[in-house]
Every structure is written in C-alpha cells, then in structure tokens.
Image 1 (cartoon, rainbow, N blue to C red):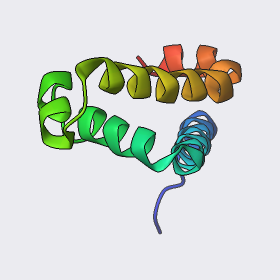
Image 2: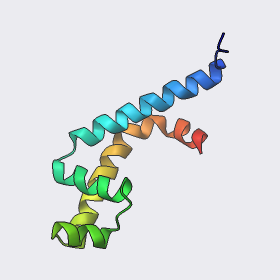
Image 3: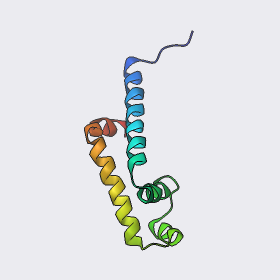
Amino acid sequence: STPKPSSAASDVYKRQNEVQEIVNHTLEKLPSKTRQIFFMNRYEDISYPEIAKKLFVNQKTVEYHISKALKALRAVLKDYLSFLIYLI
C-alpha cells in the first residue's frame, strides 16, 4: 500500500492548493489587458519594455497594469502571508 503523507505535509499541500486557487481566481477576475500583461511578465518572463513594444503601449501603461495585478493579489493573499513565508 502507498504510505500516507504526514499530516504536516498534507496540510502544506492543501494550503498550497488553496493559495493557487485564490491566485487563479483573482487573475481571472482582472481586466483582460491587466491579466494579459501580468501573464506576459510573470509567466512568460517578458520584460516591461518588450511587453510595451509588443502591445504598442507605453512602458508606464505596462507598469500600471502590473501594479494593479499585484495590488489585487496582495489584497487576497494578505491572510496567507505567514504561510507563504513558511514556504520560502
């Protein structure tokens, strides 16, 4: 039989899934342009100047959308701060 993970490991796994669901849900609720720019930067590792060039917008516009996305994520993840620090 497969050994069961320890209770602590199981709790960490559950919390990680919970945090990921919250992040996904928050990103889905963002305006499409904000979500697009955030994904380009954080998931595709595209720099602000490159995003601005690709989308034909000013770099300040890119910065605004990244800031807006991060603000939304900080607001919903504030209760998970101690858990997130634990993961580091």
